[in-house]
Image 1 (cartoon, one colour):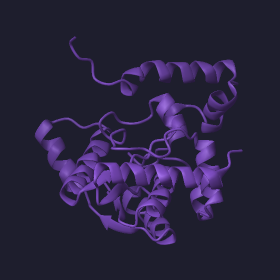
Image 2 (tube, one colour):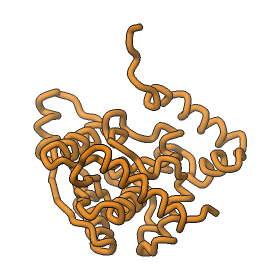
Image 3 (tube, helix red, strand yellow):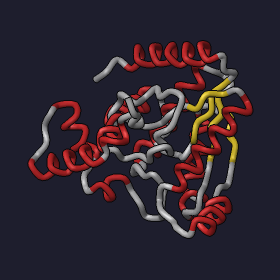
Image 4 (cartoon, helix red, strand yellow):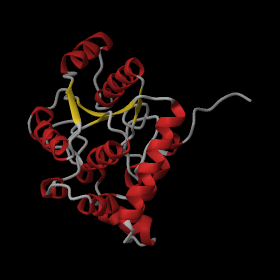
Length: 234
């Protein structure tokens, strides 16, 4: 297990240096009521008092129920200021204008909201993606994958939970099934067809059965473009 006391100190120092070098006045991040944003919020708050988490429901019923409730409880637990922006109407207008709908619209609308706040209030946007999601490409390009810095991108889901326990996070966030909340009934593991424990076993120990390894390889290869900068002519 990692030394999370040392990890906390080092990550706080990293966040402070990023904010200071950018000449920023604060930090903003999306608070979905999940494990990753909880850890990011807790670390950012310790590094920068002027940290705000933004709850941004965008259509799905669970956004207004369990996710909102959990987000508020977690923000209160770690004493993080919270704002609420309902993007449901914006999404409806966008879908009507384009004539198409897909699950990536919500994360991209949230990114726009966060960067609007960031640029008008001289804040940096903190990313909330973890190593497991990054390797699998389980994030939206130019959506939840967009940020100014990310203090947890090297941590697997297994390590995220360990870190949260060290910080004394409420037990309900440890027990909550990981979900992007993109639609009702959605969970990360059911959508990918593999458990995070299997993904993390591969990432941390290099072990995976043939079935799981095939899934991991398929997701990783298909999402390679998400982890690379845009192609440019040279």
